[in-house]
Image (cartoon, rainbow over the protein chains, first blue to last red):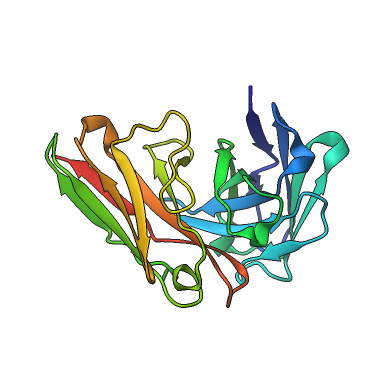
Length: 123
Length: 111
């Protein structure tokens, strides 16, 4: 079964760090770009970051540039998001999503989504 | 403010046809970037509905169709059913922002 399972969310104070993980199964992980997309409570979807199949290229939304770092370990079929200097506006459900192409700048669709992991930023 | 503009809500009676617009600019849809559409049912993750402007993934009913022209795209749903009640999002790539962009989402209500 094709599946993405996120983990690592939780309650964190403003200014602190958190690392999200996404475990992939059921497809050839290192053939596709991968992304993080977030959704604040009651709000729409916001793309956060994407990484190419071979980790050569990565892109970030302006709202997280310089604070968040995406990475992947193809040997472990896993995607990560290191989130530093967290702000209250980063509070959201974070989804891991599979690209149908190899590069995040390829303007391709996301065909597989996980169920998300919730990040709450509050003092 | 989302880079791609969608109406906040649309509605229709069962069996009717509704359309949802997605308006962009010369740096995204107008730059020949493909548009994709997602359906998000309450409390669930988004699901790919249309990719590459007008293509349906396997399993998506042909009641759903997409089109693109100039700097805009549209999602049409015919034969509206109660189970179509959901939020719908368009997505593209913006060359000026060098990133993926989503529309603000449209809530479809089946009357």
